[in-house]
Image (cartoon, rainbow, N blue to C red; front, side, top):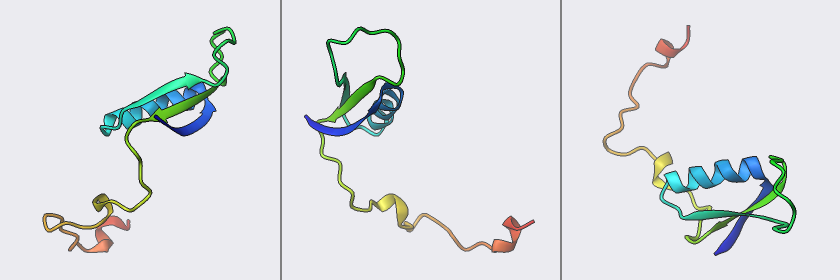
Length: 78
């Protein structure tokens, strides 16, 4: 597994959930595993991923043939 993120536990937990929602296997681990678990949400944690995450743009930002962007912009300006 590759290290993807290091930061507060609360952010790491949310990131793991978001990655798993998109089909990316992820796990979290505390930076200092021997420290007592006192419920501190700012405790440093790491997110590890199996699947490589690329920074290349995906197709979700390019319009597809099914997408219709032909609408007057004035209807959104009020």
